[in-house]
Length: 281
Length: 311
Image (tube, rainbow over all chains, first blue to last red; front, side):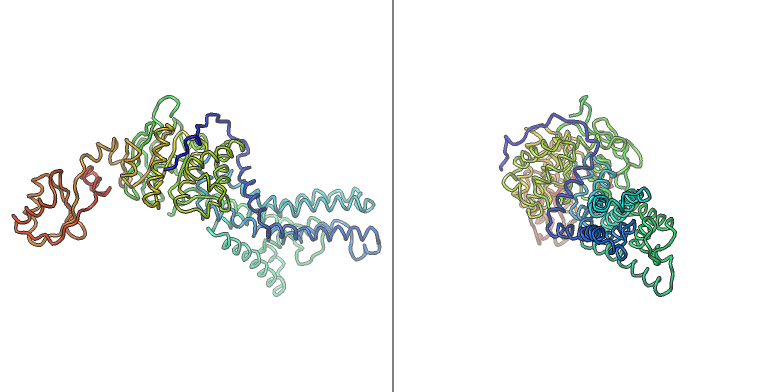
């Protein structure tokens, strides 16, 4: 029986517990996701709209007449962020679907919860993974795009009346990233299979969007926007950036209310599912 | 060991339920420093006690303390001093053993560098040194059991909780795992609770045991006290009136109980099959089948605890 005597020693230097106990969870999960080439490819593709928008700003500053077709104002950022919602959903499908589901499948949940970690530490640690990825394709390129606008066309953007754009980018990107991440993580916690969770998330988002389109186009019901996660997020962007979109033009308070309710529901699901012991009553 | 020499774990009138199912009903006991076995058939409440100790389950009533702390009020401090090897598989998908064990160490509060260094040491200790850079998902059952032990050991806990550590192992793997646990308990001086339904596993490592049955502590003490003298076991099928024969056997100090396919006889030392044949002949009973059997944990329990178990 091989016991390597010299290999084990008692560990006496016990230090105080970390304040940010969730950080190793986030770091390791991100490391594992970013090791996948396909995912890196998807992440790279998510930046293509950003490149297109930078080119757009460049063209308009060089050929001012192009500004008639490609207006340079707050709407450009609203359009860009609304476009990025699709990528946040894709990144969450491939990056977040397995975060809790795999832990439930492999029993890793016990490894986490038998440590000096709270349920909140675990949820925060996992949530930060899709949140970081989603912010990387919304907030970061949004702000860089704004900076590019300031650098390339200061005469267009360096105006007091356009100073709201940066805070609006932050607000919209944070709401989009947080809600999509929460929904993806909550769905991940409902299954023991990453694949099932991914398909479930996609089905939910795509299904509700289709219902919304049918109700809006077939029955002219504007409030159908509130049914779809994607449309609610887009409606918020439309309101924040003053984008003209008749289909999504509803008072901003309603989508905000729906998104808040969805987020609270997701937190409740996570709280009930992230447990070391499953109690069936 | 607990800081003030007090028992590591104490529980008093502890009742825990899963919804409507009562898993522990008013149990009391202590775990002293050193290796202690937690014995009992499946569903007896052993794992429930461990999970309550980890703060996963809240007691309906009663009190449980570990290191003098309440796991419900101070779960982080308690869990920091515990190492838990669960019964079922547990690993983080996509991780190598060294990354997984280091990660577990970090989650327990070790600084990253120290966690990495300890992960390598512990993996060598459990015999996975050469395979430590392999993905855990590619491991055999025995290797997975060892990596589970390594993740429970990495932060050098004050008390190690081992839930059925030999589950799914072949005889050699089982021997190796028990040797490791024995080494941890004796040479490394670590306190542990070995939870098992296999008496032989517990016997190999522990001297003290707490026996659970149907959510209650059936008996606590040393294994010797629990098992007493081992008996010889025979599965026998008779033809004819066996009542007189069984009475004669009982007079010799034997015990018996009905089994699925006849009678299971427990003969005291000095008696063997020849006694059965002789008495059968005297009573005019045919022995249609006789096979030596092994004394199961259930037998030992039933015999050692008698009406306590059956009642």
